[in-house]
Image (cartoon, rainbow, N blue to C red; front, side):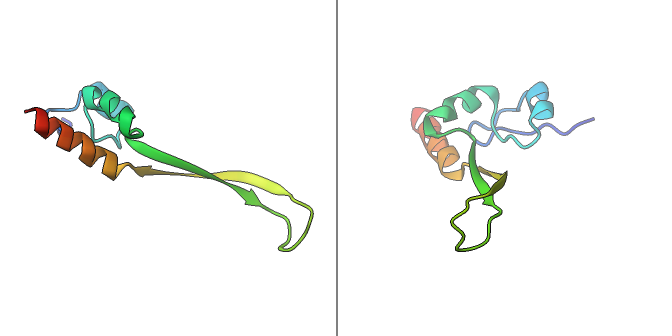
Length: 86
């Protein structure tokens, strides 16, 4: 039996379907939609790899390296909003 995880904002259980589909989430469905105004639960960035030699005028590009990090500031602002309403 899976352990129920709680929302980082309202401390209510995260729906099992959501928790299974997005195992890294810390937000319930309601707050996952609400955090969009602060940039989303995760911040994504992409950097194109350059494969040409340093100083070369020829620009050869390889793949794209992406990173995903949790929007800690956005979650905190959403939590502050929630606490101000209660």
